[in-house]
Image 1 (cartoon, rainbow, N blue to C red):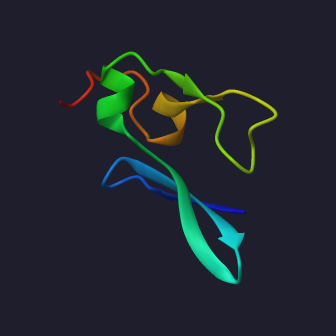
Image 2 (cartoon, helix red, strand yellow; image 1 turned 135 degrees about the vertical axis):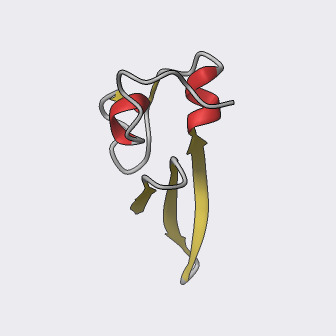
Length: 65
């Protein structure tokens, strides 16, 4: 598993290696944070809930639509 974060785009994309190819297993954006999805379990870190505002660099800001 692999997770990539693009703070400029305020996007997190999690990938998993399946059948020899990297496939997207989850994509989260600041828009989802604004829609009330403030915390998420994101592979490969799904044992804990992660705060999307902290991960996407929007903690303490008004969410972008």
